[in-house]
Image (cartoon, rainbow, N blue to C red):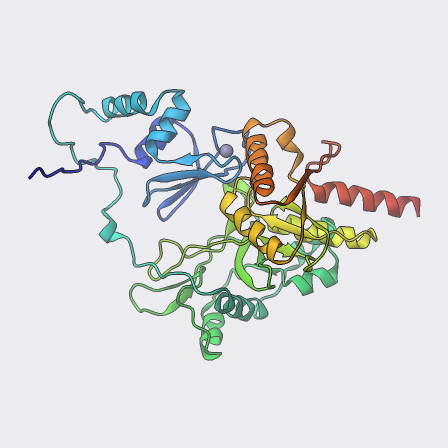
Length: 373
Ligand SMILES: [Zn+2]
């Protein structure tokens, strides 16, 4: 009998990012956020998970392991990239020497804290509503949202809140007193020493509820005040003790079963803003917001939900940078194909690229309407 032994490659995702020279905008726990070198990314849309050794850009959808990263960056085949990386790691491919233990590599999997599987949508909704009920929306955040075109009543109805920046022990204690189970709710974790539940606050910003087709809040996003690591981050407790990775859902805004069509756009907040503006304009739109143009798994779920709701037509209303960026355009084309293959009638919306998003376009329309009134 022959035994096959697996030798890990002598380089890690972290080494490869390091060697690429790309500036890391933000780093926390086992993750990094950097500007994506594969699309015309001006923020930091590329997420690197060092525990899993993978990267993914939420803007263009590019993703993979260290080999794919290096190959794409250097315009090489993965075979060439492997050889190149081994050389950089001071390894010779021809020799049978065992790879030297890489000192900057992440600790083995056993050192990663226990993660809890995610709760059902109903339970997530109960926990997030319980959390949002205890929070307020600060004045600066309120002003920012009103400037985007949302109304005061939208902010209350949608339960937009500011991330709490002070002590949060009372908030957590209140949730537990209400009998809410925090195990498996992204954003909550157990203190590794005391075992007490904690809220995982990773920066200030606006909490944006991501609501599924039933109206359940399945996830929260954070519109960050400091956008150097990206405008929107998930509210998560990934890589924490008894923490949970967030799973965002297609966000439904004003969608009712049996309607003739919906608009699919990118972004939870964008969908909410566009919905409100369209109502104010007197021509209400129903929107489904995806978190990222290349979030194909999420779009697949949306297809199933739209079919269940007997909605036959989708207008794709992605940001107009698809007109100039190859990767964004490719992601858009794939979404069009997926929808058509599933039997949905797909149509592409485009407008004056001076207005980037559908929300920008509607806001300009509303301002014009008010001017001429
Ligand atoms: Zn990208």
